[in-house]
Figure (tube, rainbow, N blue to C red):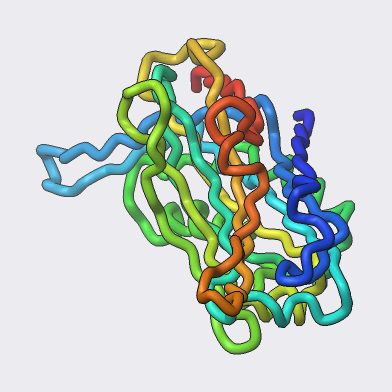
Amino acid sequence: MAVSVTCRELDKTYLNKSHLGNLSGGYLELLGQGAPHASNLPEIKLMPNTGSYTWSAPNSHIHEYFWTLSLTGEPGWEYKLKRKDAILVQLIFHTNNTSCLVRVLTTTLKPPFVIKKTMVDRLKEILTTTKPVRSLAKDVAPQELGTLVDAIEILAEDSVPRYHAYPWYSKMFTSPVYDNTKGAEGVEFRIDRKAFRNLGNRIMGSVGIMIISKSKPTNHTELPIKLEARARVSFKTPFSSNGSGSKSDIWIPLEEEFRDQPLFLELNPTLVES
């Protein structure tokens, strides 16, 4: 499957400002498969003869999407960042008016180098993780559940721990949309400024998702899913002699571009009948 990439550079209005670390450039990039496989809805059934439950999840696929945030500034610019939650990255899944929904399975923050695998192996893994997770059907036995757990563990390999030198966490949220429909579901990463200091000025994260089809199997959904990315980096707020503060947050893309010029990947899921 082809890998799609989209990128947005830091707007020039943020450049060369002392309270923003005299930034000289930056970008936010989103990478993943543009034509992912959709999965069937899992089915849980009660067996009348035995009283036990069976769990069937045929045609299940897990996909990993990567974001990269990079900023370049004067030496020590990262010390001008707020201490906690200085970095915010949001991924938003626009599934309204489509026949799919998105289930987030895992989030990771990546180290600067892939320690256990070469990058070539990692790129292969991006593709191979789209192969069907073996059926969880027949019996909810530990060995069957383990196949899905093992697949999630593959995505979490070489992940930065959520504590100690690299404090970070992730959570789900709902983003408002501009067409008066229900909000879009998303996941956000909140990362300490230490990440830029200890991992370098280019940090990467990922999300492992399952795209679930809500309708009968078809070759394509009616409309593509838009996977939108946003990033905010917060600096300490400087105050002037009259007590007023300067704008201390930078956004990629700009806030005013969220509606008409968002940064997104277009996903066209397909569902193959089992």
